[in-house]
Length: 125
Image (cartoon, rainbow, N blue to C red):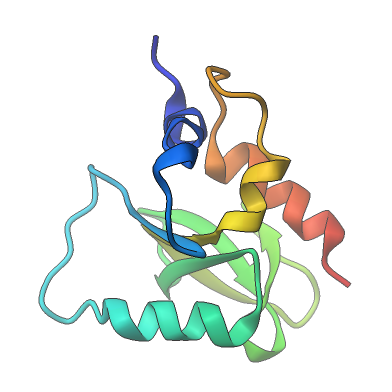
């Protein structure tokens, strides 16, 4: 059964020993400039449940909208919230172990980007 990005991640929950999980999409290409330790440090410092690897806004990638401090404030669409900046999701993220409790039960297909991110935005103050 194809479980999409979230369902596959949920399946490894029992094997996860650390407080966070680094996920890199298999259909993304990364070069030597990707600083994984910096991405992990940014995630840990933020206290967020999820930290996305982003780059300059582009029509070729999923468009996100960030507000002050780079905090995600919008997902998709041609225009973001007032005062936001367009960035692109580049296919990498860090998720906190605590986020697993918000996922559907094991064996259920779901997308981390389309099913989880919008819900996190609703919880953001």
